[in-house]
Amino acid sequence: MPDDEPAEFETPWRRSLAELEPALSAWALARMAEPVVVTNVASPGNGMSSETVLFDVYNVAEGGADRYVARLAPLPDVYPVFPNYDLELQRKCMDLVREYTDVPAPEVTFFERDPEWLGTPFLVMRRIDGEAPPDIPPYVFGGWVMDASPEQRRALQDATVSVLARLHEIAPSTHDLSFLTQPQHGSSALDQQLGYQRWYYEWARDGVSYPLIERTLTWLDANRPAEGDPVFNWGDARIGNVLYVDFEPAAVLDWEMASIGPREVDLAWMIFLDTFFDDLAARFEMPALAGFMDRDDVVAAYESLTGHTVQALEWFEVLAALRFAIVSVRTSTRGIGYGQTEPPTEPDDLIMFRDLLERMLAR
Image (cartoon, rainbow, N blue to C red):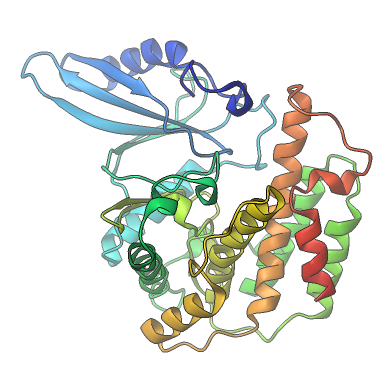
């Protein structure tokens, strides 16, 4: 983040822009055909699992600048959120979406595998104008989403549900999605979803047991629904991963959690992440965004667009909560490691929405 970022939002696992600018300049000079200079290096601020860097490349010979975004794999010694960070998979997802849908995924122009330049591999994409609903602080605490009219927020909601509907037209039955399969975690798509989460939990917990997460896994096993036809899952399907212009999606970002699974995996994740922010606002005695991303409205819009009847959504919402709980444990542990927070008395208190998950299981 920029050096003037408030202390409570500092992210010490990210490198300084002053460190990245000369490294990006050296890379651009080596990789681009003409003499260039990297300028206007900045950070967008959102995101907890990797580093994103905005920069311009000025052509010294011809004049004019092209605008880019670099997505850096996390450094291995800074409490990475995920055990693997597969940039090749992300590139394939964006290429797939750009080729077979009209969903605005970024264009990848370079995939730098050599860690010599920035310490890790990175993707370079053409920059797209737009604004994402903020995560820190969350959009329910204020900002352009809160300031919008109910009609504008509904337009944003419907347009984002439409993104899911269009992405879900890609399926293993019609497209080659073999690069997303995970046979080591199970045979069917739903087996792989659950198997991956168990494996991820074993890695993320680092020897510590989290009873609430283990209860959630048991609940998911005991209440598992019938398995529908799998589709391409965006994975991190939420409005914070979309750039909007006039409340319409201009760029759909962050494909690191992409997979194959039921449609409800994405739908429930989108609903749950907004529910989490509403719950966070309630804990700070702030009003929720009434009438925005409400469960019934999102489901009705999706069913109208796709003709698909949403099945077992409560189960998939609990799956979404499980996925986020494991991520939460990992990011909270990182905060302890960097001295930003104290270790809790109970391990489950590292789950930042513990009470909400308890209520979901009780329901």
